[in-house]
Length: 398
Image (tube, rainbow, N blue to C red):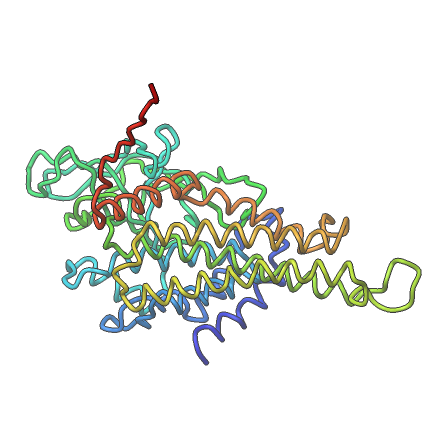
């Protein structure tokens, strides 16, 4: 069976327990299903024993899982995004090679944590206060607190973005931000269950606190720079988030269409699907999903084909577009179902909450528009001659 077919089967199991996210938040059994199906190793390069899948396959898997449970899909999406980034370089350090082999062998999960509550998100220039301090034996002591650490309670590793304090000078990073690999079963790590959002409740985007965590000398992976234009992160991040958004909308569509098999409520024999109003609303749902699917499919294809014209500003724009179309589809699905869509017993209310929470996945809409506008105008002005200064002289009759 293909990875996408496997994800489709797993999604059915996720859907059976997804309603529990309201009271329980993170659903460990759902993560266990994902691991047992071998999905985490999908994007690990084949040379390390992984599946070597590109963003197209990863996108389809995330969409399928999101149809069952968007929170679980988000945790896996973060893992895919960061494995693509970690293993992008041709030459990897021994510690990253060992990590890749472990992920392929055990279907372990890894993510990156950067945001800190006091300083705001790094995507908007937030300061990093957490520190990794070099010790006399060459190892490191990690201290600090991170927020929005998605799925932290079930992850095996995180790459933490911290300030490097290294008087020895050996790392060449003293006083700069760097990346440090942290096995989450290490002493001194505490998960603070701070995530209490209305939507994506099962993503458990909690706080991670590091208190004098001891790490080996090779734990520092190098310096940290905001994702550049050629990084896998800059393309995979928005496209896999968009994949999750589409999965939520597809689930809402299916629930609405199932609802149309119910009896008409206008005193006429037949089912709801026989009425013009319901058919019109169903069309509205699909008219939003058609462009969402098309835009996303084109984007992931261009990334896998290494299209140099598909720059990060365009990838981020796809995330904005797909979320907009998906939100509209969910809204029309809710209107089709009516007041019953707001019942706690209906899975639809979760789709509504999840797609709304997904609005706040970075990059924010204003950041996307600014990046796109900057790219478009820079590109235009670099490839076109500036307009000549033409002045129109007005002759006045005497």
